[in-house]
Length: 248
Image (tube, rainbow, N blue to C red; front, top):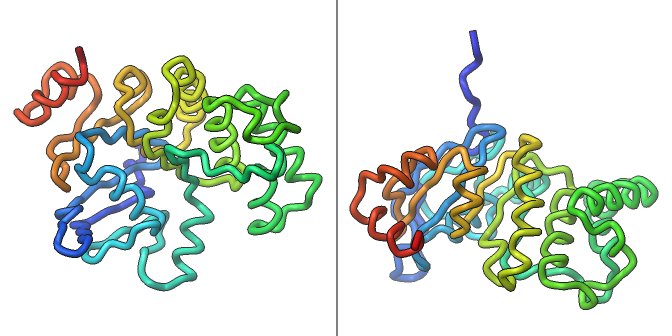
C-alpha cells in the first residue's frame, strides 16, 4: 500500500489584520512533502502576506499554522526552529553588498548552524555550481546582473539546508531576459523534490513545474487544483476573468 501524503505545512483558518484591513480571511491550506504549489492572484490579494506567515515574518492573529510538526506561536524557540527549516527568496535580493557572493552564502551556515568555514565554503561552491554561477564566487553583488543576484539569493537560502523553500515573486524585479535563468534554477530545485510555495505570475513555470495552483483574491483562496484543471477548466468566474487577463 502506498503511504498517504504527509503534509509538511498545515494552515487552518488563518486570519491576519493590519489595523482595520482584513488581509487574510480564513485561509486553510495543506502542502505535502515534496509538493510544488504556485500561488497566484491580483496584487493585494494576500498571497505574499500568507507565505510570510509561514515563517513568521508576518504574525497571524487567528487560526493555526503548523510547519513540520511545530506550531507557530509566540514562542521564540518555535519560530527559530521553523526558520531553520524554511528558506525564503524575496523580490529584492537582500544580499550584503560588502560581502562577496561566497561570503553571503557562507554567513548563515557558519553563524547559525555552526558549520566549519571549510565545509561552508565547499557547500557554497557546490550551490553556486548548481545555480550556474560558480565563476562569480569572488565578486560582490553589485558586480552581478539582477538574475545572477537572485540566483545567489537562492543558493544562500539553500545553504541552510531547508526542508521548505518559499518564493515571494522572485522574478518580478528582473528584466525579462533574466527571468528564465532564475526559473531554470527553481525548476531544478523542484525536480530535486524540494517542497516549494511560489508566489508568481510566471504561468509557463506554473504549468510545467507546479503540482497545484492556488488562486487568491481578497484574502481568501478562491480556487485550487492541478495546473491543467485550472488553466483549461477553472470553475470560478473570478479565476476565469483573472486568467483571461494574464494569459493573452
